[in-house]
Image (tube, rainbow, N blue to C red; front, side, top):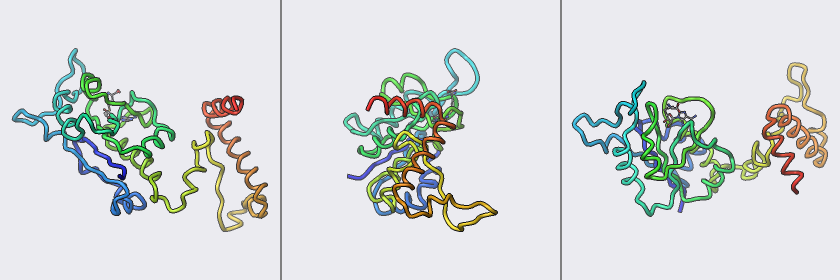
Length: 235
Ligand code: SAH
């Protein structure tokens, strides 16, 4: 069974978006993964079809109603649906390549996209939604976050990427940022390709790449570097 994504949103027109193009789009077309959208508004029951209301306790903005969202979730994913239920949320656990890999090896995901100030806390608890953040900044809605998450997952699905090995040598896969890349021309505005890369000595090239990856990680991501060093000590 291929990876099955169901996205709950007030803006289904945003999907598949860029995931309908390039490698992800081809994979979608041949059934390597599937994408279904659910319009949350279809589960509103009042005559205005409202999905949000003013926040309890007062304050700015609107909050997505628990009852409407719960009905949408229940229709998209019955209780025995094995897929994890994610809520895109700046308060969630930051998305990592490890989480992406775990999702890619599972049956799919049910993804709830928030809007306004967010969603009523009770539906998060009652439907066991796992909050996932794509970074420490605020988007106007969960849709771009869902597209980011699915982009990262889909490229790992079997047969999606042309060159399988490029998936495992990338930034974060081994706890390091990736080394710099070069290609022709040999000379660009006076800058040469590092000589080792054109030496044909594969051992030296691997050593250079590892050293550059370590240098970049140390300089740019002290948090990753500390974890990497600790993992090395543990071995
Ligand atoms: N008031 C909230 C932000 C709401 S933004 C707060 O301060 O925490 C509206 C919606 O956009 C959220 O419900 C969520 O679904 C989505 N969103 C915004 N930023 C996000 C991020 N960094 N990662 C994932 N989803 C995000």
